[in-house]
Image (cartoon, rainbow, N blue to C red):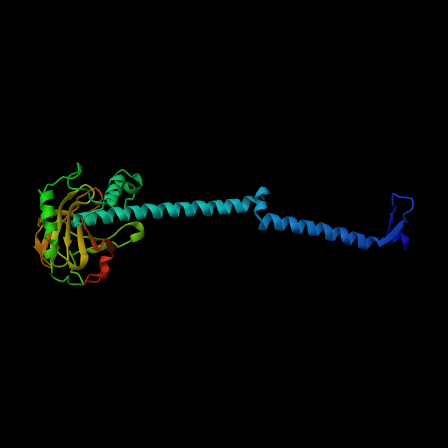
Length: 287
């Protein structure tokens, strides 16, 4: 039995002290050592994982690092895309407010000027913003002037008639692309024959009628309750700024003008208080 035990002898330094002897089984000693070792490992793991001290002892895991690194990159790209979209929407909103004659604050004006040189906005192809009347890119073939725009806007408070919803189909054609806010396609595309009729979707007043580099011949009609309808890529504009129009009245001819147009079609948008809505939700005819 003695071979299976350890004997520990404690000898005091002084001669008067008594010598003490302890005996412990080998399996018990091994168990104590094992438990002590496991306790040290568990304590160290807890410190590394659950306390700030763990930052001093980084644990490398290539598989997790690759997985989390990819997720972080994707999240960063999504955040950047959302920021660009929010910036572009704010810019588009400012243009609508300016076209409607609303006074723009100094802060918003600074934002608009800064955004003109922002390449992140310029690279957002699905959304194209019309330029100011006095820019070099604006070409007024229809002789629409800034003075005409201002006179039309100033008369907007007298536009008292109720907007009649749903809206009339602005042209005879077929849907080639629907409303997609995520892709910044803030309207619908209706393909048709060149020079076919485009009519006002509801009673209103023309607040913009002219040429833009991206959207070609474009017209905006303001309605009551904050509604605005937009007609892009026309071949010919038949109404000038300040003209009152009735639902179904001929306002333009379908065309293929503007840099962003890929074929004869009408790009039709519906806005209300600076927010774009799906025109299909307002149209009397189901596409």
